[in-house]
Length: 504
Image (cartoon, rainbow, N blue to C red; front, side):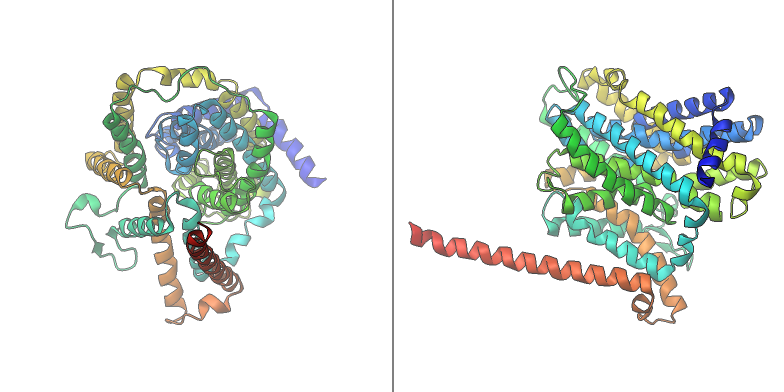
């Protein structure tokens, strides 16, 4: 009952005309940012942060939050229609773009939009009911526990890859090596930079994502020498009832995964999408279709992406720890307004906390209207002939890459990864595991080295701690099970080879 009273208090602030306007503005700008290839919420919030000086505190934070979770809605459009992802829509390229090639673009976008609504709704419930106490869960995780959690992420390679497991592992290791480029966080020494100053901070995830997926896909389309556009003919938007029933379970599973990983520092939408996709590929009734243009492959990751974006506010507002760069900018916005995020924020500024939570649900409704009924109008941009469209796509990719650090070298790096991604496509090697390795590799290394320092080089820390010990046990059980399945399938294949000549 207390939570309901707090939510009513929050809606009384969020439903003012001024705050409604800022919520709608943030959601619209975030959606547009997500639609444009190469741009993202980080650059947009950075540019708009100075405006918060002249805007009311609650309205300013509602607008910035709307840009962040609105971009999670919109970024799936370019991933599904053109295979040009943002960091949080990499997995959407797998089944979403495959559905586009099958002429199911409208269905894929409806699935992503509706699943995002479900994910956002579940996350808002978690945020409202559990934020005051759930943020303390992050304190239970030590370096060894995060290290084990990252290892669980590497186990997901067998589910994320659409090719052979060996190719997936190889691509994952390439991603780990790419993630090690730059300055070592512990020693301050440069690693694999070849004395190039622009590699001192490492390779950006945006450069790899736009290169390996976006530019590589454009090169592949141009190489085919076929006249094509992202989709043709009438857009079928609404799913049939059997298709709709397939969306709900996957979206609910993704919502739970995203809500959990959004709370943990180092988690967030990027990792949540991989985890939700891996879970669907394991437990879904249609798991054998995932990877070939399946609704579940779009629904689960979209819900996890949106849920993680909402619950990532929990560590920021409850314990004062930003879990990613966007949350760091949000923390800066709080501080600009003279508010210190942390345990005392909910009690000291209840109108801000509960107003922000209530505005998220209002923003969720705004985004559902923007991304489902108006999908046809968003997609009218992509009806331009491809030979006219692809230069504009390349332009936005270059602008988006350049705008992050205002560095022209990032554009050259993106082009280089575009050539590498095209090579991967020619060799039929899926770049998705590369992104997983690139994201998890540095986090695994950092937490592993911290664990070794704290335990004085003893590996027992991974077993003695309850959380890490449980996760390591699950990993071991999974590897044993996969080994058993592999040898059983191999034995069946040998039996077929032996019996076929006898049968003939």
